[in-house]
Length: 337
Image 1 (tube, rainbow, N blue to C red):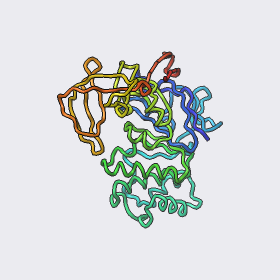
Image 2 (tube, one colour):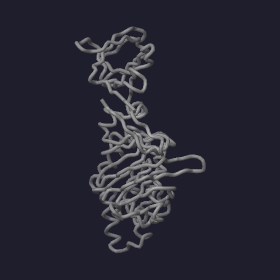
Image 3 (tube, rainbow, N blue to C red):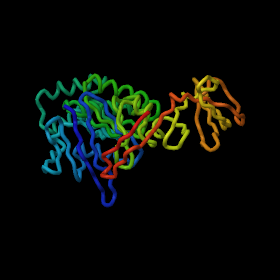
Image 4 (cartoon, rainbow, N blue to C red):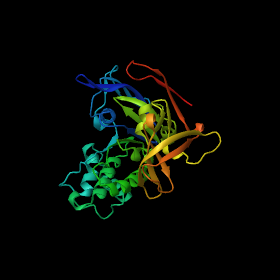
């Protein structure tokens, strides 16, 4: 069943952390809340989990209401049947792998077939034979898998991930990104993932929800978010953006051409710096009144030289914010050309 968020809002004192928000988390999908620190993504996650109480709105799992300010419904955390994976893993240091994974089942009174279910979860996260180890005897990646097994052993309707990879080093983070995605798919789970890392969001998700200042700016597939940003912040936050007209017309670096062809717009630039990226060179350009651009090239160019760049009109993204409602931040309409 889909998880439906309808008008959910939250303030802390005078600060409105989450403006009235509508969102649908689709069953079997991997949905990511993406945005900078303080954008409201973790507040939204914690309200769905039941760890924070919303000021207004409703949360439904299919037709079942688990929170409603109007109906005065607020199911406690242990009755929502959601799993959660925290940023710091939150493993009990004095408990073995088996005991950590079993903890949620014991806490909710699900003792039937507990040993077999725990062992199955441990096997599926590839930790078989490590049931008696303590957390300090495991690597960071293994600890992450224990936290995941604990979250899914109760067969939850939804698994919530609160920036679970941010505590890992860069190489392990890359490995675990692929592994977590595979585990979610293999278990057939519905996942809601919170991150400020656009690489995580774009590579792992079926749907990305971009947030800023307590509101949802855009949601869609990673391809839609990247190719058709519906807001200037989305265009700037996701990938690299070159502005032909600030806030209105933008082109991505990979679409800038270096050879003249019929029908292309021509721009003059000064090369400021050249960085070798392995498969290409990243060129930083001074575009005069247009500011700084980024482009890619197959060979090394020289800093300080002038160059002509060419842009195809079909690759220019037009961002038109036609109707921006001030009523709680819910209604946003954008035209993408």
